[in-house]
Amino acid sequence: SKGEGIVKYHWPKPGSNKPQSKISYVKLFEPWGWVVGTGVYEADIDKRIDATITKEAKEVQSSTTTMLVVTLVIWAIIITVISIIISNRYISTPLDRFKEGLLSFFKYLNKETKDAKYINIDSKDEIGEMAKAVNENINNIKSLIEQDENVLNDVKRVVRLVKEGKLNQRV
Image (tube, rainbow, N blue to C red; front, side, top):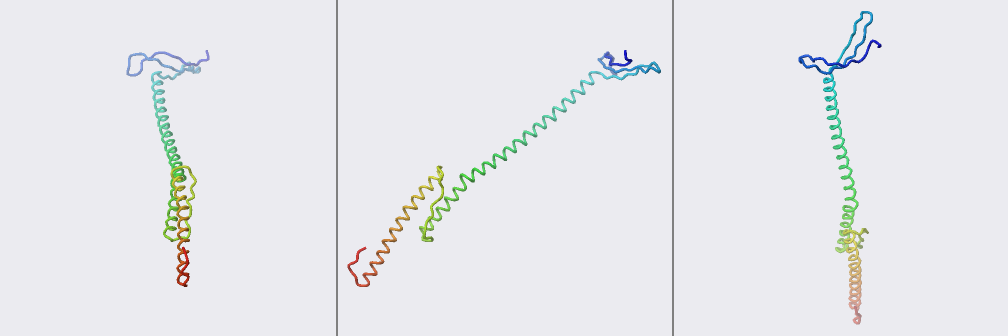
Protein backbone atom coordinates (compact mmCIF):
# COMPACT_ATOMS: atom_id res chain seq x y z
CA SER A 1 0.00 0.00 0.00
CA LYS A 2 2.63 2.58 0.98
CA GLY A 3 5.46 0.67 -0.57
CA GLU A 4 6.89 -0.41 2.77
CA GLY A 5 6.07 -2.57 5.81
CA ILE A 6 6.83 -5.44 8.16
CA VAL A 7 6.74 -8.93 6.70
CA LYS A 8 6.67 -12.22 8.65
CA TYR A 9 7.79 -15.38 6.91
CA HIS A 10 9.83 -18.56 7.35
CA TRP A 11 13.32 -18.97 5.96
CA PRO A 12 16.14 -21.40 6.67
CA LYS A 13 18.80 -20.02 8.97
CA PRO A 14 22.36 -20.24 7.64
CA GLY A 15 23.77 -23.66 8.47
CA SER A 16 20.29 -25.20 8.73
CA ASN A 17 17.78 -26.57 6.19
CA LYS A 18 14.82 -26.14 8.53
CA PRO A 19 12.86 -22.92 7.94
CA GLN A 20 12.54 -20.63 10.97
CA SER A 21 10.32 -17.66 11.73
CA LYS A 22 11.76 -14.37 10.50
CA ILE A 23 10.57 -10.76 10.67
CA SER A 24 11.68 -8.29 8.02
CA TYR A 25 11.12 -4.68 7.15
CA VAL A 26 10.93 -3.94 3.45
CA LYS A 27 10.65 -0.75 1.39
CA LEU A 28 10.18 -0.13 -2.28
CA PHE A 29 12.90 1.92 -3.97
CA GLU A 30 10.75 3.26 -6.81
CA PRO A 31 13.40 4.81 -9.06
CA TRP A 32 14.90 1.38 -9.70
CA GLY A 33 11.84 -0.73 -8.87
CA TRP A 34 13.70 -2.58 -6.20
CA VAL A 35 12.40 -3.77 -2.85
CA VAL A 36 15.08 -3.33 -0.18
CA GLY A 37 14.69 -5.10 3.12
CA THR A 38 16.38 -6.31 6.26
CA GLY A 39 15.29 -9.03 8.64
CA VAL A 40 16.02 -10.91 11.80
CA TYR A 41 15.18 -14.39 13.03
CA GLU A 42 12.74 -14.37 15.93
CA ALA A 43 14.88 -16.97 17.72
CA ASP A 44 17.83 -14.50 17.68
CA ILE A 45 15.59 -11.79 19.18
CA ASP A 46 14.39 -14.24 21.84
CA LYS A 47 18.01 -15.18 22.70
CA ARG A 48 19.01 -11.51 23.05
CA ILE A 49 15.93 -10.77 25.17
CA ASP A 50 16.65 -13.79 27.39
CA ALA A 51 20.32 -12.75 27.73
CA THR A 52 19.30 -9.19 28.62
CA ILE A 53 16.71 -10.40 31.14
CA THR A 54 19.26 -12.77 32.71
CA LYS A 55 21.89 -10.01 32.88
CA GLU A 56 19.42 -7.53 34.37
CA ALA A 57 18.14 -10.13 36.87
CA LYS A 58 21.73 -10.77 38.02
CA GLU A 59 22.34 -7.04 38.38
CA VAL A 60 19.11 -6.61 40.35
CA GLN A 61 20.01 -9.58 42.55
CA SER A 62 23.52 -8.19 43.10
CA SER A 63 22.14 -4.72 43.91
CA THR A 64 19.53 -6.21 46.23
CA THR A 65 22.17 -8.28 48.03
CA THR A 66 24.42 -5.23 48.37
CA MET A 67 21.54 -3.11 49.68
CA LEU A 68 20.58 -5.85 52.14
CA VAL A 69 24.15 -6.17 53.43
CA VAL A 70 24.53 -2.38 53.74
CA THR A 71 21.17 -2.14 55.53
CA LEU A 72 22.14 -4.94 57.94
CA VAL A 73 25.50 -3.30 58.65
CA ILE A 74 23.82 0.06 59.30
CA TRP A 75 21.30 -1.59 61.64
CA ALA A 76 24.10 -3.45 63.42
CA ILE A 77 25.95 -0.15 63.94
CA ILE A 78 22.80 1.58 65.18
CA ILE A 79 21.99 -1.27 67.58
CA THR A 80 25.60 -1.31 68.83
CA VAL A 81 25.60 2.45 69.45
CA ILE A 82 22.24 2.27 71.25
CA SER A 83 23.50 -0.68 73.34
CA ILE A 84 26.62 1.25 74.32
CA ILE A 85 24.57 4.32 75.27
CA ILE A 86 22.13 2.23 77.32
CA SER A 87 24.99 0.30 78.92
CA ASN A 88 26.75 3.50 79.90
CA ARG A 89 23.61 5.17 81.18
CA TYR A 90 22.13 2.28 83.15
CA ILE A 91 25.16 0.18 84.09
CA SER A 92 28.57 1.83 83.80
CA THR A 93 27.69 5.29 85.16
CA PRO A 94 25.74 3.97 88.17
CA LEU A 95 28.51 1.46 88.92
CA ASP A 96 31.10 4.26 88.79
CA ARG A 97 28.98 6.35 91.17
CA PHE A 98 28.55 3.36 93.46
CA LYS A 99 32.32 2.73 93.48
CA GLU A 100 33.06 6.42 94.20
CA GLY A 101 30.51 6.38 97.05
CA LEU A 102 32.04 3.26 98.59
CA LEU A 103 35.56 4.66 98.31
CA SER A 104 34.39 7.89 99.96
CA PHE A 105 32.79 5.86 102.74
CA PHE A 106 35.99 3.84 103.26
CA LYS A 107 38.00 7.07 103.43
CA TYR A 108 35.59 8.23 106.12
CA LEU A 109 35.96 4.95 108.03
CA ASN A 110 39.75 5.20 107.78
CA LYS A 111 39.61 8.79 109.10
CA GLU A 112 41.00 10.15 105.82
CA THR A 113 38.01 12.50 105.49
CA LYS A 114 35.71 14.13 108.01
CA ASP A 115 32.47 13.25 106.22
CA ALA A 116 31.07 10.36 104.19
CA LYS A 117 29.16 11.27 101.05
CA TYR A 118 25.99 9.42 100.22
CA ILE A 119 25.78 7.49 96.96
CA ASN A 120 23.60 9.50 94.60
CA ILE A 121 21.71 6.74 92.76
CA ASP A 122 17.93 6.66 92.89
CA SER A 123 17.17 3.93 90.37
CA LYS A 124 14.94 0.99 91.27
CA ASP A 125 17.29 -1.67 89.91
CA GLU A 126 19.87 -3.78 91.75
CA ILE A 127 22.48 -1.02 91.73
CA GLY A 128 19.95 1.43 93.17
CA GLU A 129 19.01 -1.07 95.89
CA MET A 130 22.68 -1.60 96.79
CA ALA A 131 23.23 2.16 96.93
CA LYS A 132 20.21 2.54 99.20
CA ALA A 133 21.53 -0.17 101.54
CA VAL A 134 25.01 1.39 101.62
CA ASN A 135 23.52 4.86 102.26
CA GLU A 136 21.52 3.47 105.21
CA ASN A 137 24.70 1.91 106.59
CA ILE A 138 26.63 5.15 106.05
CA ASN A 139 23.98 6.93 108.09
CA ASN A 140 24.05 4.29 110.86
CA ILE A 141 27.84 4.15 111.02
CA LYS A 142 28.15 7.96 110.98
CA SER A 143 25.77 8.06 113.93
CA LEU A 144 27.73 5.37 115.79
CA ILE A 145 31.06 7.07 115.10
CA GLU A 146 29.64 10.39 116.34
CA GLN A 147 28.39 8.67 119.50
CA ASP A 148 31.83 7.07 119.97
CA GLU A 149 33.51 10.43 119.48
CA ASN A 150 31.16 12.01 122.02
CA VAL A 151 31.96 9.25 124.55
CA LEU A 152 35.71 9.61 123.88
CA ASN A 153 35.49 13.39 124.25
CA ASP A 154 33.60 12.93 127.53
CA VAL A 155 36.23 10.41 128.73
CA LYS A 156 38.95 12.91 127.83
CA ARG A 157 37.08 15.61 129.76
CA VAL A 158 36.72 13.36 132.83
CA VAL A 159 40.40 12.34 132.67
CA ARG A 160 41.43 15.98 132.50
CA LEU A 161 39.21 16.86 135.47
CA VAL A 162 40.52 13.88 137.47
CA LYS A 163 44.06 15.09 136.75
CA GLU A 164 43.01 18.43 138.19
CA GLY A 165 41.96 16.64 141.37
CA LYS A 166 38.22 16.49 140.83
CA LEU A 167 37.69 12.83 141.55
CA ASN A 168 33.88 12.75 141.62
CA GLN A 169 33.45 12.90 137.80
CA ARG A 170 31.49 10.37 135.75
CA VAL A 171 31.51 9.44 132.10
